[in-house]
Image (tube, rainbow, N blue to C red; front, side, top):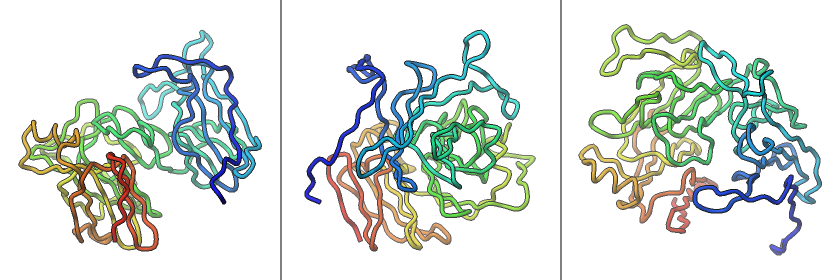
Length: 329
């Protein structure tokens, strides 16, 4: 109640530092936010399951720091000691997972695509049948590009290129509201993607569909060579072009709010680079949840922090990269 330290917890396998990004860091960093779920505080320490002994998962009592669950996960490896590879949708993928922030859906916990039971027992990938929100590069990566995207799926699917008219989730950042999702589409996901000619980003909404979607026979300007399987059970609700790159997104009441850096169709390469670097400040944009039409927008003195939007009691709170927190109504 008075802000005094209640408890602290450290349980590293050993006090070891490594060189990372030009500085000394722990070999087992705790990644980002702590998830409170069903009265337990969940977090992970480590970088990925194939190095430094893997990832250590924890579930603590939020008030006392008491360890309720602890599990160290590494590998998996094949008989020759190499990372195990499995075939998924015809594409070979290395098993294992990178560390990140926990999420929870339908009684299970997830770090990216890897599922766990509440006691942190790993769940085999073939047992995961329920869709859940997955960020291919993790929820903390604020530099979306054509090889990263957020999706709603049972597994992480790398590589297959998609088209802009694919109805399934494939955005730079995604918000979920029941069977409906909202996202910002920028780069075309795939091994060789790019921003659409003419610039601009799209605020997009889709919903689950009872009928399977099929790609059009004639795709233009970009042909769809492969469709991610999960995309076939979605349909588009609406799509609206917006003059900003979406770095934060929330759904509150009947409004969709996104924030990012300005992205005008008239920008040349120098202006695009300047805006991405923060030289043109930030921009916040509110739209109707029903059709995506603009309600209001305003420029911000600095770009927003990645995923730095929140809403409460009809107020919109946004954190900016210059250290400012703004409350808008």
